[in-house]
Length: 109
Image (cartoon, rainbow, N blue to C red; front, side, top):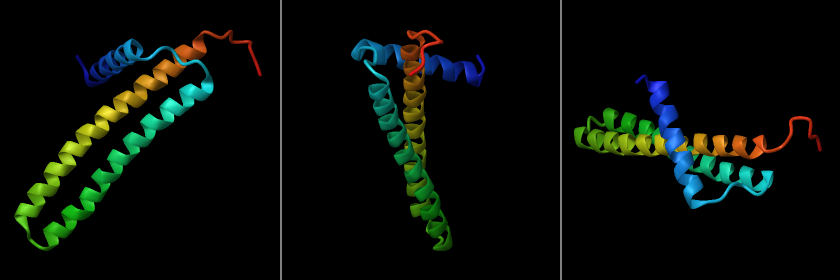
């Protein structure tokens, strides 16, 4: 299986899991709010990874090998968490699309 297919499978599994726990969105407002929350969680993790890069450079300048190892460990863990959050973002995008699919194309507000 290629990477794209693997990611799509992970997104589908997350979508199915989310639907087992929570019903379909009841409005676009709800869909947007849930998606926004997931995006914010993803961005928070990415910010930590970016901050780790700054800390890593400081550790390099100090020639502190132990600190470099610690920063890399944090960066690795938070990168994985960011990836998990991004899968949730993609699953909520898909759920939002499924919510919108129930409305006729010609329906306009």
